[in-house]
Length: 171
Image (cartoon, rainbow, N blue to C red; front, side):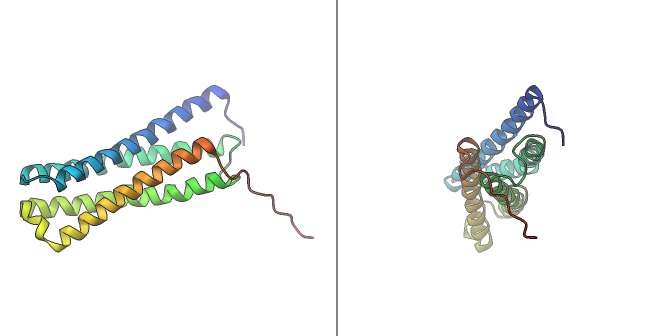
């Protein structure tokens, strides 16, 4: 397959970094909103925090995840890196699968359930065991998402472990 010239490669890399930055930024906003929700004594603020998370889950999380995955695949396929040539890339791909599950699926579902319960119960939601479990899952998902995204950034910068060894074919 033909490789990208330097200028298109730089544009594609810039797009990839933009989408990845949005993805990390939105996840940090989720963390801030979850901290605000846990520390409020206002039902309206509690509802606004979870509504904000859900709106982000429906929009920015999905768009940035799709953008990051598409540009990442294109960078792998259209440059010398390849999809499976390097251990650090394989690690990033596995972390990407985790991020898709946490971001696109998890944060959407957890924030939707939280909005539903908080809309019905207000501050009383904190006494609801279903809400407590859901909130724990959401916070755990947020922390894991930040950790996995940070790990992907570090892997991209340091590129540890080098290339995979070529397999010899026995005759």
